[in-house]
Length: 333
Image (cartoon, rainbow, N blue to C red; front, top):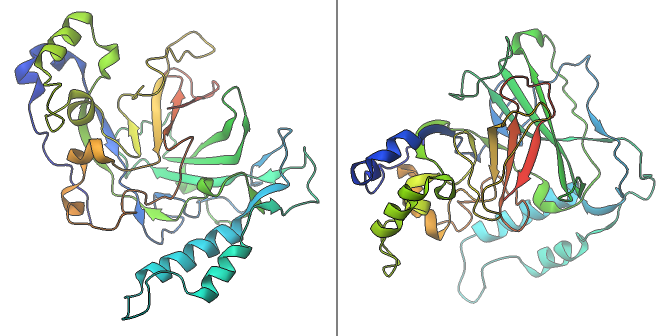
């Protein structure tokens, strides 16, 4: 099923024509639970990884013994999904049974990999796989047509003490035999870093620059136009600027830190490649809910990947516009 973003509740360029110069486009990925295969774009699915290419690992020094066992994370999710999907019966409360609660109580964080030293290599975890044929605007360099995103799921990397994101690009046709048994971590720093398998429904959409990066005259006109007393009024930030959820390209939302300069080692301003969001929408951004999902009542429908970064924010991945071999940068919002 495709996903279609509703028309914006208002044509902001008709109100402030200067905003036409700050219009851009991004591709909403619309991940939804599914069973992707290596030949498909996905979040949390198996990768089109060559059988003769070593699986990438993390060797950055950090504790890797303690955390959530990946097998336990998946088992917990299966138990809870089944429990809450069962119809309630008279006199029997919905949700997990006593037996299931006992099992869930055993699935705790702990020192589940005591044999691992702080520099022992551990396999990276697949996060996303994007084929250029599926994702408008992916814009991979050279003849590459496939982007693969993996990370080390421990909050121990870099100044932000976050996950360590790795990017791999390749030509899909060069993969003649796919690695069937793909390595998996024993332990992750947080269960929120284990993605559920999702298929994608990419959709190119129009968006506008983050408000804090607009010129002062335009921001002044937006402030004058915005009805700040009506909480149900159309909002530039929430309804007309940048869509929520996973997306490729477009503008970055700086709603946590305020605008930052993301500069490459070569001195050039970097381009936003990928936004990995904890939610597909929230209370303030419901106008972006796809038409096909408007009647969905499942409270978890807006968290299909089960990934939660930071305190429910998003992870922005930037690349150099002139050379993808330059070090990419990751910013938490």
